[in-house]
Image (cartoon, rainbow, N blue to C red; front, side, top):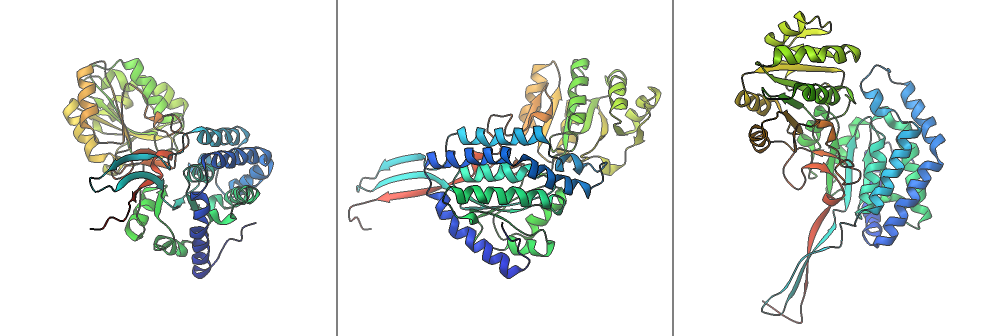
Length: 422
């Protein structure tokens, strides 16, 4: 089993070992990478009971009413889905080793630009042990080593999962250090963030405060998988029954994830009819609504019980719970302005039967994923056919949207000559 390190010096030794081991993963051919992942998927299924026992220990330390509880929870069906996800990643084309450009210069130099692994990928994440398997599968498939820093909440589950992964690596004749689990000690996070000799990229996945901390303290390049502050705009020309179904799905199907709805933006012209249509389902799911003045009056008159007046901070807030805010607007222009001000640039949606209005919304809104007449809950690497994902990138450099296998590579120029000098 991996010994979880407890000092900065020991942690740096582990990072160095993973950096050295990354050469083994980088040199694997396509067939061996596939075999490695298929063996890992089988191992997860074979060790289901041990994984679930560790997960129960983690869950026993958390209040079941905490929104993070669902993120932390593993069960047989979720583990089966994770195993299948690993197999799906194994079946994807290897993104490394592809020739992106090839030419011969007039002086005879032959140039090739090829895709190559990033090297060592560092992931900092919170109460989601599924990330441990998803990230490992993506990194190994693309030829990268991984250093994982999970949250304290998932310590026991992550420990079992990473030991399982390292056992599979050893069974394949590879260094166990190709994947490492780092301590949860917060004092050691900065050691990871400054390990520029050993880590090639850092990817934070979690709360806005975590992402901000990494962004402010990391010397290693960072790709953000941002918090999701997601809006659904119900336009005057919306099919209101369709809008109701979309809004309810986006809010209640899994409120603790980043693509869940946080704010309903509704045209004032249809708000008196549309908002009462939400009441029955929102009451059933115990959704708490933070409403602006106009929507508060409508919902109050409709008899909705879980109602509060919105404070300024309720807009631009990622609730991660059975809660949302409501903003009434006077048309498309005001809706776009409101979303532009408060969006985290993750996923934004419009519901309207006017195709020109939808097109303008899709072209104008600056987000990683924009929707017309569909729930924001679809923003997901697996759903988009990309296999598993590391997260949803809300920035614009290198990766945007589902950060999946295809983005875990960079480029290298290979130049072959016959004695040319300049």
